[in-house]
Length: 284
Ligand SMILES: NC(=O)c1ccc[n+]([C@@H]2O[C@H](COP(=O)([O-])OP(=O)(O)OC[C@H]3O[C@@H](n4cnc5c(N)ncnc54)[C@H](OP(=O)(O)O)[C@@H]3O)[C@@H](O)[C@H]2O)c1
Image 1 (cartoon, rainbow, N blue to C red):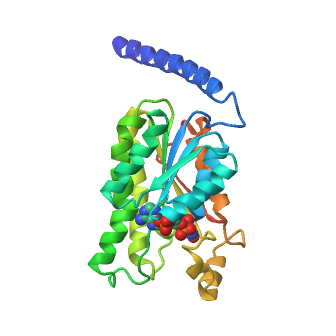
Image 2 (image 1 turned 60 degrees about the vertical axis):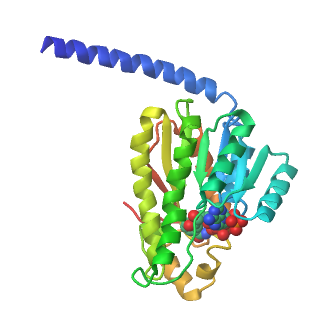
Image 3 (image 1 turned 30 degrees about the horizontal axis):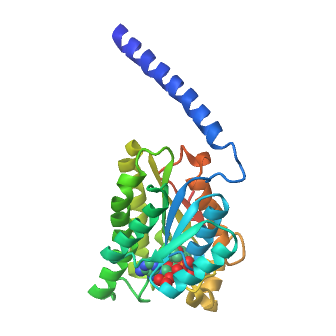
């Protein structure tokens, strides 16, 4: 009994000691509050338009060097020109996240900046067909699961040696409100986005000992090319508005501040969390 108390007391002292170290580390890290991500390197997939582009811009505005990527060279060039034109520190490359050789190139491009990576934000996602879950062909299932679920895990496993134990590395995955409130006509896509919630939890446990936090952005209906078909459909939008507290379509910038926060030292005790950005909450 006595030895148990002694052990507990030592453990508590250890905790107190590490919390002192932690607060010292945090205050030094947050010294420049206008650029909380200064000196960090971020890789953002699917970042040449829409939500990914807004996230890439915000992370760079907050001080990070950001590596943008997507499938088409022309889109990468345009995004780089726009963001470098704003004076932001950027590089970029073509990367279809479902292709192994493209992921290799993205990793190599990211490492060229400083030899390490601090943040990975996996935005790239696809929905090749509108239809029911059971109506989805094997080809559709393969594409959705490869790009939306497998690719973030495979890319992260490649980046892991360059992200672990660096003091504050962070991964943000991107799910969808459809994971919580499935739409019958977005069947397989909704399943893939629910899987990302599970992936977030699993990875957060697996990577905590390596000092990497893993969280998830869960967007509602956001005004991008991807969702045009949905929010321009009056039936769908009226149905969604019935659920909404805030009666407007979201903008990509509504998502980007959250991702910057999740990467920042202010979120250093947050992992395994999924945060909805939808103008309402589907959860208690
Ligand atoms: N918009 C919404 O309402 C909404 C809601 C919930 C969740 N989401 C999720 O948010 C993410 C981004 O959507 P968004 O609305 O911003 O779409 P978006 O405006 O259409 O942008 C998609 C971006 O991803 C790139 N991309 C597409 N497929 C890719 C692939 N296989 N590999 C790499 N890059 C790829 C596109 O560029 P290229 O064409 O050059 O590849 C583009 O830069 C997706 O994961 C989506 O599921 C969106």
